[in-house]
Amino acid sequence: MWNLLYNGLLIITAPVILVILLAKPRCRRGLSQRFGFSSPRITPDGRPLVWLHAVSLGEVVAITPLVKELHRRHPTHRFVVSTSTETGRDAVEQRLAGMAEHLYAPIDFPWAVSRTIARLRPVLYVFIETELWPNLLRHLSALGVPTIMINGRLSSASFARLRWRPVKSFYRSVLRSMRLCLMQSDRDAERIICLGADPGSVRRTGNIKFDQPLPSEAERRVTRATLGIEEDAPLLIGGSTHPIEEEQLVEAFVAVLSRHPSTRLLLAPRHIERVEAVEAMVRGRGLAVSRRSAIAAGSGNAGVKPQVIILDSRGELALIYQEATVAFVGGTLVPIGGHNLLEPASWGKPVLFGPYTDHCVEIAALLTQAGGGRRVTSVGELTEELLRLIEQRDERVRMGQAAQSVVHQNQGALQATVEAIDGQLASMETTRSSARAQHSFPVMAGR
Image (cartoon, rainbow, N blue to C red; front, top):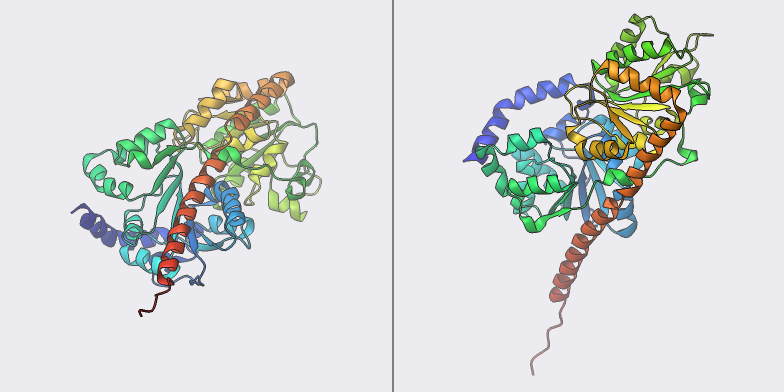
């Protein structure tokens, strides 16, 4: 009954979904693919195909080392990575060229997922975090295709929503159909079991984001020099920021300037299409501002060094954190749930964040306990922390080292995840080999 209701609601809301997708520039491309009316140009070629799903840029970055290792271990397999956004597609094409092909993920309409599955014919489906799409998972289960959740997590909001009795009963069979649930933390493992997952399929493997490799010198496309920032100037970075947070960061920055006029602020909005609005806001505060692209093109205001730089490029935030004096990670001063706290921590930088960290609660706790991160709840607290860390070099270095230690001490999830998927692929290969042997077994002629 609940499955019929779910699909009925999907059909009724299809026009609304279409309008929403058309209204978002980052979701317009691949629209026919998403609705299943046009099959992707990925057709079976005889090789076993592994389908991995990563929603957007952050998830693609997280699974990139995983896909590279799987490709190395299984060179005869084919890998397809689906995303829901254009930024995700760009990341797949840039980071996994020659190793994986890109596909826009189908919306969870029965016809869309069935057409996509029929075209791909995957031997395994792997998805990161908690993209629990009932029709997709049901169709794969009905066809005998194993599914694995990796880096699984359940925020408090998602858990509360899925615990509602009708929703929980609906999702129970979906969760039971999955071969493995590899969860980030004990809390996440307990929650997924509570919702109905088979305890025997649930493992705590940790967070693969701890295992992200730092870019090499050859990969560094953006530095203080390319941005026109002096080596000794304090640089504050606000990464993956949202509306209201940018205003708060600029307010704190203005207060810092009164004591340290050489300080620079780099803002990296979470959604790049908001760059124009952020730039207008900064100009409204009377600050000299320039976009990263304008500086690279040499088209900034001649002779005027920007006090604020807006990162309007994709895939460079993780690189530029290396140049930070202090980093603030967005989605935390507003009720979003927080973004990647590990990117600045990996470079050994002090990490500041707001009170809303439900999406990264374990990482925030580890950083806070180790003294590598600090929670701020207001513009006043943010200003106070920025000034303290700019002025106290020893404390800044100590805090950065503590943050980096947290990263190093919690690595290993990638290896555990690779081995779990490896075991599944090996088991499937054994089954296929047995089936081939049975079909080719010689028949003895009777006398």
